[in-house]
Length: 292
Image (cartoon, rainbow, N blue to C red; front, side, top):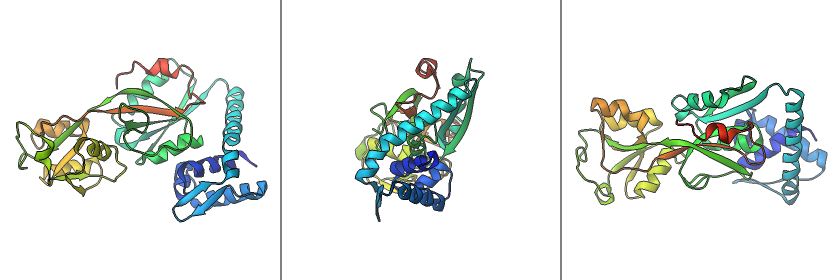
């Protein structure tokens, strides 16, 4: 039983598919499958029930999970004590906020810590980041959520003890082109939006999930793509878009988009890590007052 096999085991337990676990670990699926088979052979037991909808832990797998985390934590502690002059932090972040919000967090995280070794890993998928944190492939991840409990925005949480810290608000704007029938409306209710088209990204997109909470299901969903494509489609009058304010600020100033008078609550920029392993000593104290 090797540490790399345990990391693969945890990743598969968190993601429930070999393909997703491979993406989180930066491996090819065949390597993940091989490591998992080798681990099961070494223990002479089956750790996962394999079904078309994914992999679920067997009773043996459930018993191994806390042991796996203990062994990996102890190995990481040993590594840190051996190279005590440097602390390694692999930080994951959603690509949407990588350029706009991550640099300020990194600057505050590294302030006064010359021995801190931070590497940034971006991903378009929140599940990949959370799975990486759960599996130990990442020390922490920056993502978007609501002000409520972790995952209250409506996304899946891996089976791991997770802690979080809110670093600031990410304001949203509901926008349309000036030529849109609702452009220039002085007031707006949900009833006014019924039957209109809402431009959205994939079902897991933070802004799409925020739109579901704000607007319900009265609007027709039209899938366009990421933030940049959705903004461009909105500018062409193809529908309504709920986007981060930082992504439409220039368009609002130029008049190519108008803000609708229905204020959405902001999302929260949230740092997530394993509750049983704070990635940096004094993390909360150093980041809590950050304005990002």
